[in-house]
Amino acid sequence: MNIPVPPSSNLHQFPPEQIAFHRTELSVILSLYGRFVAAGEWRDYGISCLRDVAVFSVFRRTAETPMYRIEKRPKMRDKQGMYAVVGMDGQILRRGHDLKTVLRVLERKLIRAVE
Image (cartoon, rainbow, N blue to C red; front, side, top):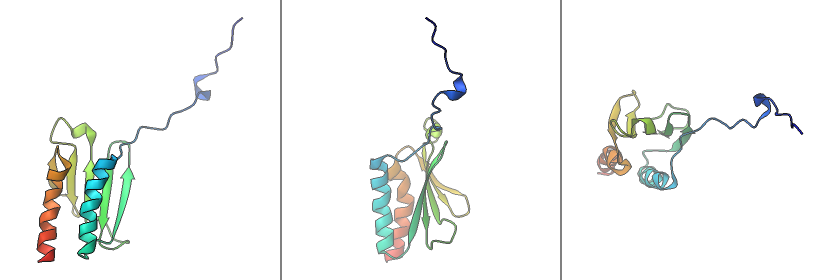
């Protein structure tokens, strides 16, 4: 008894793999975000989970371009590190393997904003 095999187009198609922030990574980022909100510097954020990169964008106002983007690119893990902080102009402010270390570039700006 031969059972016909359906063509591959009828098989369940899996959605493309996406890169996302892990809960522990988000807690570190949101902790920093909360301190900037309390200082009145940041007002909104957005999260994008794409095929190659996950991006946490920070806005001063909702309708603007992001002030900073915190990016996670796993393909860069073995090279310069998978985490990066990118400025408004697209310049990479810091890149590294440890998220907390990379975010220190923004914490310095918070100390100046509070003083």
